[in-house]
Length: 395
Ligand SMILES: *Cc1c(COP(=O)(O)O)cnc(C)c1O
Image 1 (cartoon, rainbow, N blue to C red):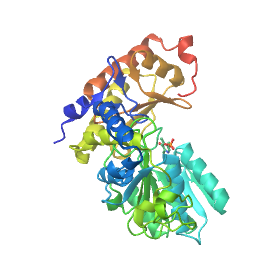
Image 2 (image 1 turned 180 degrees about the vertical axis):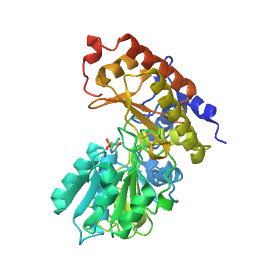
Image 3 (image 1 turned 135 degrees about the horizontal axis):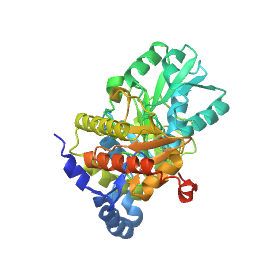
Image 4 (image 1 turned 90 degrees about the horizontal axis):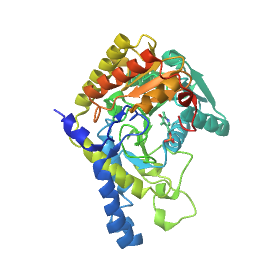
């Protein structure tokens, strides 16, 4: 059994804060501070350029990738780290599209995160493809013989709706299409099984449920059956078969290494390594069970105590990730009032209060406290204060 009291104790959680926003930015693992300080003191300062070999900086994107692989049902040597998620989306979708040269359609849904859609629009314009966006519940029926790539974010960032990865992948394959799964709100939140689902490509970030810190690098996975054929449009020297030969012509590295682009963010990846230590004793089945327990308790508590909000997430936990949305006509002000009382969730336009339940550090006390504070704010109307209506740049 996973010891969730121990995993919670591994994080720095500020006094007086109930943190339900790990789906945007996970909290700092206590060990990260010293780990990064040691890297600066022992590696960057003392080793300088030799750190690429001596401290293993060059191989770090693959080593860290192997640790992520265990959490998403992938195998060793199949995941590599680097860049940001938006860039990894571009690489995965462009590689998948190129493997289906006789087809033009990239299919996605309107619940996807806008950055994924923007990236796909840019790609579609550049390669004369078409981005087709349908409602989340219409995805399965929209898969036809024109579709080259099905590009889906498994868990909807607003509603927490979870797509059936296995069923949609099978449907896509039956129609001759390939799949790209964005795991931004899945990795570290639910029990992902890329191999079991027979997916083709997957990407994700590490600053949400994996707790790698702001600016932590993204990851990309290619199924081994495509690894020697896939070629993203964005190709850089670190993905060359011999980066230090400085050839004028690009020749892709074998396997997942070709998905590397440029110099990896070594300092950020060092913080991520400390975050991944916390995952070492975690069983993903236990993680999923705890996530369901927390989100079910929150929905029951809110529905019993807050008549002014309506559930904006699937009621069946099988169709939900690890976050829960509730709608309120003044969701922005309500969330500001919650934050002022130390309960941090977030607002998502136009009217959603979103709460993420991170099984590694959230517990039932957090759920009860958040329900009590939300009920209080809605009951006494204290959210309706001018301060809580002011918008800031990042919401
Ligand atoms: C968080 C998120 C992103 C963010 O992409 P970055 O390039 O890391 O800023 C992209 N897609 C999805 C689905 C997300 O949830």
